[in-house]
Amino acid sequence: MSYKILIADDEAEIRNLLRLYLENESFTVIEAEDGLKTLEAVRTKSPDLLLLDIMMPGLDGLQVMQKLRQESNIPIMVISAKTGDAERILGLNLGADDYITKPFNPLEVTARVKSALRRFYDLGGSVKEDELLTCADLTLNTSSCLLTKDGRPLELTSVEYKIMELMMRNPGKVYTKQQIYEYAWGDEYIIADNNIMVAISKLRTKLDPDPSRYIKTLRGLGYRLETPDA
Image (cartoon, rainbow, N blue to C red):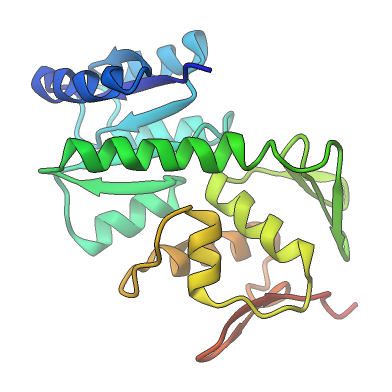
């Protein structure tokens, strides 16, 4: 299967560089140079993954991501010149699955694209068809990759989905940060990485107004999903 990658960046040189490396790996590449064209391309050309710049004319990348997360769970990898922790955390909070800073190594970007696609499509589709995982009022359909609470669907990013799938297979089991990272991101664990903290925080917000109702933190150990008190 040839995956379709959308590169959204207002700099033609960056689009051309990424296109060269991605097409060398047999990906189909489409491009957009501003926010509005990015939205249009996602809606009309159905890419499998979006490489998204933050500073674009029209709608910036953050605005694009906010709009897309209301209607799509497409994997989004931000590529931005904004390197601060605040910008990185904001991007992840708005629904990015990964955040890469400029200048970047195109070989690393290509590797991360492959990892994200494998995590979202291959691993997500390898489970038994129509398998349902439940914990209290939460139900996860691993065929449709849909999480519901009391029958109400909750919109998840691909990383959030993988975290919930991992935890809902064994409610009450403690998972270390390394186990969560390697399963959800599909990469080797980076000790200083704060992506886990951000993803867990976002999940808690989506699951319940009480941030500790479902996912518990065990200091020095990790996290566990448990049945909340009635």
